[in-house]
Length: 300
Ligand SMILES: Nc1ncnc2c1ncn2[C@@H]1O[C@H](COP(=O)(O)OP(=O)(O)OP(=O)(O)O)[C@@H](O)[C@H]1O
Image (tube, rainbow, N blue to C red; front, side):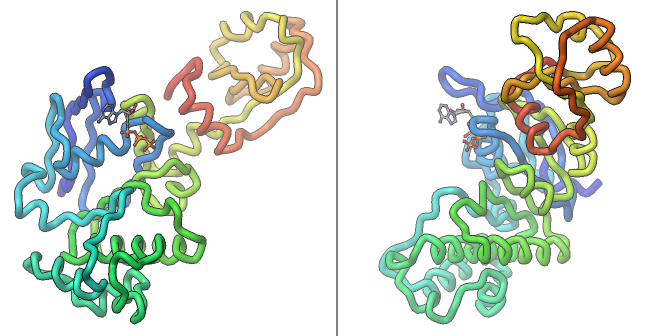
């Protein structure tokens, strides 16, 4: 495989915290990959190491089979981070021309404008007068200025309105069609599902699932039987059953996940659990995601 990004047993510890704990994965040319996970899962730390902004405590990060800090590697990588900083005193067009001049094969200005939705007016505006949304467009244009082969975004759509969001993802798909490799982090399962062809699901500094959105959904959107029950009632006998994948409580209901819901119903009556208001449901994706990333009986 033509590997663009490769992490091998990467650990990053800060003084009192292991932010990334033994992560390994590789990403091939042309893949669009979402790093998905809740707050503090280690997404930004992982991205910072891929960009060469942080060094791993141990393990190895390689981009194009080289060190992330090498100049020739950095020229092939475009990024838009959470913090957007701009150069005050210069107009948008001047900033773009300046940054483009550092790259060996920059994209022409008109292409940058077409890809990012910058307007004629934006180009003439001084950086310090840009609105939040305009700053983001500039930052997106700067990420693409060097016509990068690998593009990395940390939570790119935070603060974007729906129109900007749609435009952003359309452009990403266009870039993916050109064979660019794209990584982005997000909190939102829906966004990862819509935009990525592969999801790396992070939790507590590790990867708990790696697959296509369809595979991840198939694994987490399991069928379940839900019911109300006296909270004092022990569910121990259910926990011991092999056909049951997981049991959790949400909004006073108990959810029992299993591929065999008929068997769960049988057990409920056999074991005299005292369940009432019983429902059989196909797990909702968002619920399953929440459950998966909030620490339950079984991780994937
Ligand atoms: N410089 C640092 N010093 C100490 N701890 C840190 C540092 N950077 C990150 N951490 C901790 O490492 C863990 C992972 O943080 P990280 O920012 O990578 O998570 P994240 O998945 O990007 O979260 P979010 O979605 O909130 O941005 C967190 O517990 C965070 O507090």
